[in-house]
Length: 114
Length: 117
Image 1 (cartoon, each protein chain N blue to C red):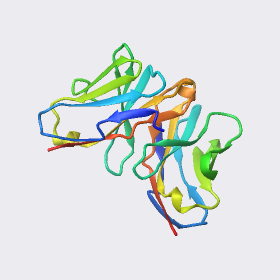
Image 2: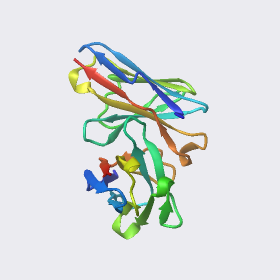
Image 3: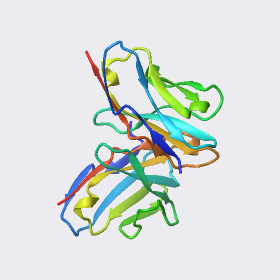
Image 4: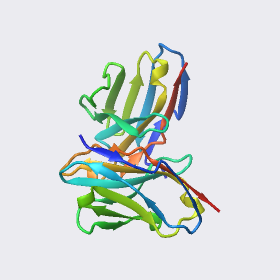
């Protein structure tokens, strides 16, 4: 079964700092990759997803992620974070080809300080 | 606005009682819904896939007789925690794909915090 690892459990940044959250998965076949965000008191929302094509995908709110197949990674990045980016971020994967089930990482709590 | 509504948002019950959690898709029909469980500081774990008009598919290790799932309509799935015990205390979240099917975003409910005393 596939698994997802997020190495950073808690990240604290100052506004305007750059962000990179790590995500690695274990599965040798075709995968679909996702990043979800959960703002305080809100439900999970999709930030971006990768199915195929350009490995650099852009999502909402200035986020992007790069799929590096050789490293089994899908790191999330943002050049300049804002206080409003404070949230919990989850990486998720499902097996390509029709699988509906998502496997989530343990999440990264990001706190952006003014 | 929310496209998946989950109710209640929190519930406290006594050990041995049963609790029902509802998950509704708003403005779209969901033939498949997913139930997740999240323990503190842990990831979301898929419990089961709820299929409209048929039996739910449970993940390995999830007791189907304890976590009863009913998906009687295209917009409603319910999860009933039967004979709840303190170890069932957790955060339960439902989700459903939008109208585009599994290629569309997965919409999540706000979750239900269950506390069993």
